[in-house]
Amino acid sequence: MQQRHMISESVFLGGRVIRKTLPVLSPQPGAPPLKRLMLPQGELAQFHDGIEPIRYLAYIELRPGALRGNHYHKVKREYVYVIGGKTELLVQDVNSGDRAMVPLNSGDLAFIETGIAHTLRPLTDGQAVEFSAAPFDGADIYRFPLEFT
Image (cartoon, rainbow, N blue to C red; front, side, top):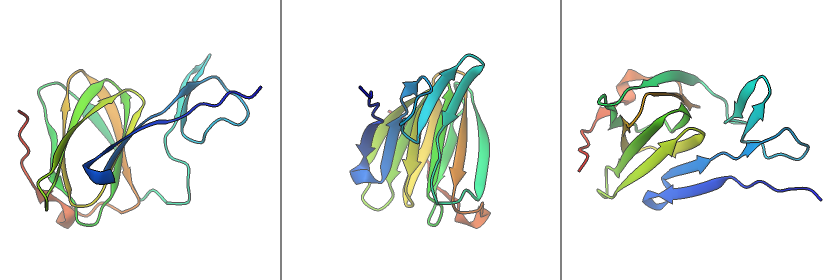
C-alpha cells in the first residue's frame, strides 16, 4: 500500500499569503515534489520544483530582536523558505488594511503576493531563503512600517 504525504497549507489575507509546511519523508517512490527528506547524510529540502524560473535568490539570517522587511512590492511575488529556527511573518494588504500573523518554523514555505507589506520577526536564531521569479529591483521596494502588537 502506497503511503500518501500531504503538504499542510494555511491561507492568509484571502490567499495572497500562503504558508506550506513541507512533509518530512524517507526517500520513496511517489513522494510529493515539495518535501523534506531526512537522509543518513542530512536533510534535503525540495522547496521549489516547477516551470516558474528563479531569477532572485537570497539567504536570510534570522536573529531575535532584528526585524527584516517592513516593505511591499508591486512587481515581485516572493517565497520565503525557513531552513531553521522560528519566526513570525506579519503581513498586511496595503489596499484593504487586512492583517495576519503567519507563524513560520523550520520546513515552512511562505508565498507573498504583490501589494502585501511584510516583515519577519525572528523568535530564535535561524536561516531562511528568499526567492522569486522576478529579478531584484530596488525601485520595487516600497517602505511600509508594520508594528507588532
